[in-house]
Length: 229
Image (cartoon, helix red, strand yellow):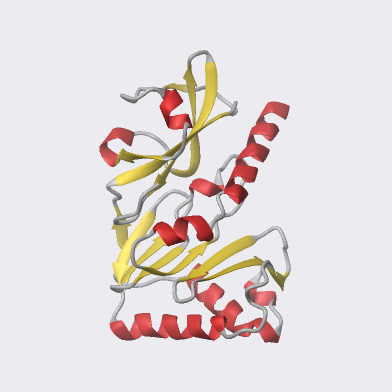
C-alpha cells in the first residue's frame, strides 16, 4: 500500500508539473476555449485525461471524460455565445492572479484557457459557491462542466500521447509489446497510432507494465485533430 501511495503521489505531482491548460491547450490547433477539470480519483493520472471541453475556431467542439472524448459542431450563434461569456471572464479584475478561489472544496482544480490574450485561469472549488464578483467565471465554468449538445458523437482519435513513468501500481502487469524500446518512451511523451493501442486503457487510467525487470505506469492521452504530444 505504501508503494501504491508513493506512485499515486508521483503521478499527481507530474500532473501539476504538466501545467494543465497552459501547456496542452496552446498545442491544440485552432483552440479558442479549453477547460481541463480531471478529478483526482485514486488510481488515476489526471495529467493523461482528455480535456473536459474544447472549442475550436471552426466551431468543432469536444467534450471529454476520464478516458474518452465526444466530438460535435456548434452553430455560429452557439459558438459566439460561448465567446461572449469568455469575453466577460477576461474583463474580471485580478482574474490573472491564479489560483482563483471559488469557495467549497479547494482540492478541486480547474484550468480554463482562452485563446484571445491568451488568458489562463486556474480556479479551485465549486462554481456554485462562487461569490457574486466572480459570477462570469462561475457561469462559464458551470456551463462547460455540464456541456452537452445534440451533435456530440464518440470521437475516435487517430493517435494518443504516450507517457511512461517508472512506478509500481497495484495488481499484475502486462508486457510492453510496442516496436520501440520502453527506454525511448521514457524520454518524453510521444505519439502512438490508435491501431497500436487497441486493448490498452486510455486517458487517466494507467496501465501497469513489466519490462526489463522493472514496473512502469503507462498512460495514453487521446489527441485532438492536429495536436502533438
